[in-house]
Amino acid sequence: MNSPIETAPVMNFPIAVPALQRALTARGYTEPTSVQSAVLADDATERDLLVSAQTGSGKTIAYGLAFASTIMNDGALPPPTAPLALIIAPTRELAIQVHAELAWLYEFTGARVVSCVGGMDPRREQRALAAGCHIVVGTPGRLQDHLERRHLDVSALKVVVLDEADEMLDLGFRDELEFILGTTPTERRTLLFSATIAREIAALARQYQRDAFRIDTVARNQPHADIEYRAIRVAAHEIEHGLVNLLRFHELGGCLVFCSTREAVRQLHGRLQERGFAVVALSGELSQTERNTALQSLRDGRARVCIATDVAARGLDLPNLDLVIHADLPNNKAILTHRSGRTGRAGRKGLCVLLVPNSRRRQAEALLASANIKASWDEPPSADSIRARDQARLLTDPLLTEPPLDDDLTAARELLGGYTPETIATALIRLYRARLPSPEDISPLPPERPRFDNNRDFNSREPRPHTGTPGAGPMVWFRADVGRRKNADPKWLLPLICRVGGVTKRDIGAIRIFDRETKFEIHQSVADDFMKSVIAVNNPEIHIETTTGPTPDAVGATRPRPPGATPPWRKKTGNPPNFKTPGTDPAKPNEQARRRRNKAKSGA
Image (cartoon, rainbow, N blue to C red; front, top):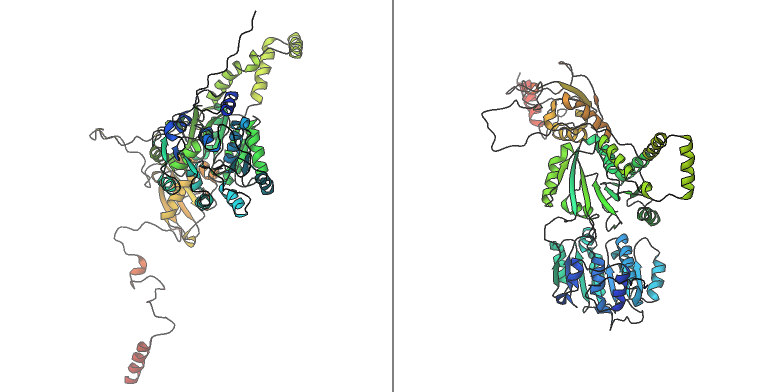
């Protein structure tokens, strides 16, 4: 009986280089992505390209295939001497990933691919360049350094690729790009890839490209189709608890958590480690060795969660990254787009979650609207829902369906000989739960205030909510350690109190400013949450604690004046105490006054 014949998958890539077809087949590629099909179309052949494509859409393979016909003659490469193709990437992580992708794509062509990135040994790169190569991948700063030292010969270049050009401009590499492009041959091809074609990118294309063929693989101003967006309302002091419950609820795949500062990354990394999460941190203070170790932990599965800043995560491409969490809100839509684009790559679906303090909901809504993103609003997963999901995951754990080993069967029979099945199952559940970080109990948020409705009936008015005026309901007094001697003023005190306490101006009542302190009222319904938020934020600008209300005759207090009342310092002289007329000195009377006094004395 003849064995079945294994057929190779059908190759639908429109390329005529057998070595590249062989590499794609070995990696399981059968159908090109939209951007790969676009750059291989007849209209794009041997032309400069201006390409707008989403992150994770297969751009590296796209331009690797696009310039194959430019650097190869009859499907073969010349001996390695000066490089024929130069790829410029914004970050060393992206450059290293591009190097790896092009290395396997051109494996069967005999191509030599060299990387030149910051943080690596420049002498080793110099030796690799001197030995000859076909393709160079690098970051702008390191490439400029090799050009200035005459280690990199670009006289034979046939194609230059700018990968993620928008990020290079955002990172301030315009001068380096202009220097590098100015040294390359004018007859080269230039392929420019960017997530968005902003005004600056279009200007760069006009300056360095010739009759570029523009390719848009996604509709302009449209969000990533493979990413689901959710916004989670949470009290400011429970942001960390909300994050913990999100990580526990979504346990499959990798997760990338964004913070706005290095200090926030450091603190959150330490706290999640203490709770038992497999977590690594990425920030600008890490050495390249530490960074590589952290990334390798994520790639081989030893770590599942990565805490990172925006800059540290640029160009990051992690396998099986299904969840992106914004622990701190992005400052603008560009940062939101780049952060979120770390997931939903290569046809995989991704989830992007924004943790939104209750007091910053309007800011989050404006941010999402500016990026044309529709997000579903919800609250953090509860501890009960996480425990229910843990139980469901236990029942479908692969350990229960995998065939047992002989040693396992022997141990199982011994256990059954001494214990009941219920006892063994109970112990199994306890062991399963013991390895999981505990979920947090999160306090429910107050109901959202109703938004303005143009169709509501104004004749049937409901009782108005608390307006923040003194006496409009029970209040609690608090004390801040700033007073008039530190230029305390409601203009900046009020926003600061709202920010550190996670409240609004409507929740604040009377404010009394003294020489060395300020006392203010907070509505009793939010006083406990206010104090928890103050402790969690721990703002060094101000120290706040509970106190008693000021006495009516408190010295130095700023009290409201009756309307139209004259300040006491104006009742006699019209000027405040110690007021001086400009140009006079009380200790030295002017000359005219002295003469008048002398004349009066002589006349008497």
